[in-house]
Amino acid sequence: MSDNKSQEQISLEKDYEEYVKKITPTHNLYLQMLKAFITGGIICIVGQALLNFAGSRMGMDKETAGSFCSLILVFISVILTGLNIYPSIVKFGGAGALVPITGFANSVAAPAVEFKKEGQVFGIGCKIFTIAGPVILYGIFTSWFLGLCYWIGKAAGWF
Image (spheres, rainbow, N blue to C red):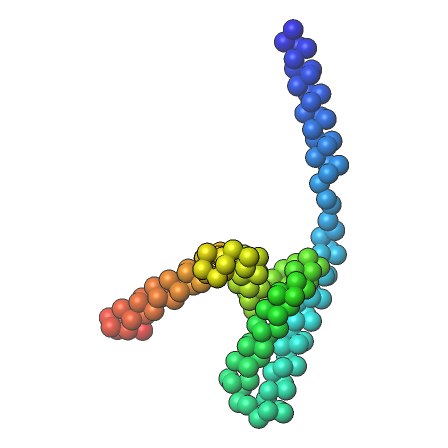
């Protein structure tokens, strides 16, 4: 009787493995990397075009042009997220769309759009930083901690 149960168990495990293989989507890693490269490259080209435009046509210095470029890229990302276009770009380009500053702007704007129906306070106010919140929190904490270490090092004469 125990052999019979083990045979049944083995049969169920094989059936389950076949089922998982059948429903699990397969991805072509090289195609995904190419799409990410193209998407990230297009975002970088747009950024560089904005940077060149701000520097040569608008007469901004390098630092101001960089700030202008970042601001416009974030603005475009938020608008595309609000119009539900950026999620399609992310689906196509993967990390190529998520890694640049536009991806961070999308991670802040997407929950605001998603939870808008729950109201200004309990929807947008509570949920807007669900994705980006930890990044902001640990970024600020790490900056504070490193600044403190630097200050202590300067005071002790180590730097």
